[in-house]
Image (tube, rainbow, N blue to C red; front, side, top):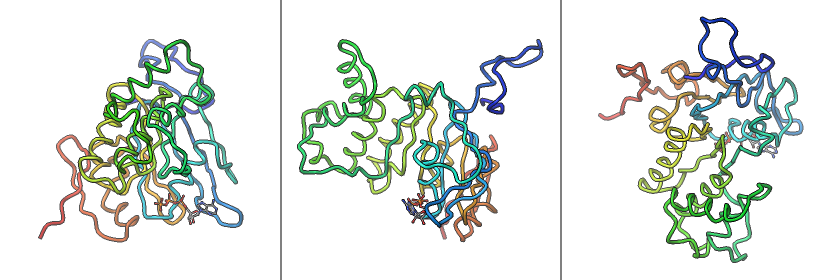
Length: 273
Ligand SMILES: Nc1ncnc2c1ncn2[C@@H]1O[C@H](COP(=O)(O)OP(=O)(O)OP(=O)(O)O)[C@@H](O)[C@H]1O
């Protein structure tokens, strides 16, 4: 696990007993006593969350509780009404954060091949020589859309569109990938394909993942950390500290039986009768 230090402390250790400096990575993003809202409407208050390098976060909670609002604040698209947000400049200033939205608001009348669509993800990224092509080939292979590269994006199935959206995010070579309900509405195989890509990005390339989902099975299987959204409050931290019967019951208003496996990882017990 990667420990975090407050944003204003410098990296590295000075005494011989300390762990390697790499363990003291600054947070990618940290919110301190942050309030968020729109016009006169308050959505979240007193948010405290610290997202570190290589962590896999799941944001979980009923509809309309502020998950997307927090993502907007993390991305800098919504200013806090109160409190402070630290964004690690080594990550944010270099454009190494990719966001996959829930839906894409584009005009379907525009003819766009899958290839052209994915390449729009390189906007603002300097590439040299044949880097664009090699990046494109790589992400098409990762998401399994190589054979569809010349197809019209708008004729793809829902699952394929979701994978193209993911490829458009991956082509920036992100250090942080923020995905808003990428498996919603997908069949089991399509959802599994998207999840495989995210899990592989996390495990193989140490990409930090922030994943909004309503699926508890995904949370207990993949997350290292979780944030629960309810009534304007966010409860965040390591998975075992957050995914408890008490916290899930409070968040969803129904009992959710939780047991821990031998590694202390929370598991949701199936509700079979
Ligand atoms: N641009 C906006 N202007 C005003 N209110 C907004 C705006 N965007 C969101 N809201 C409101 O903020 C609240 C939180 O919305 P948000 O989209 O963050 O919730 P969410 O947890 O992501 O929901 P869902 O699970 O349905 O995607 C809702 O009451 C919503 O109506």
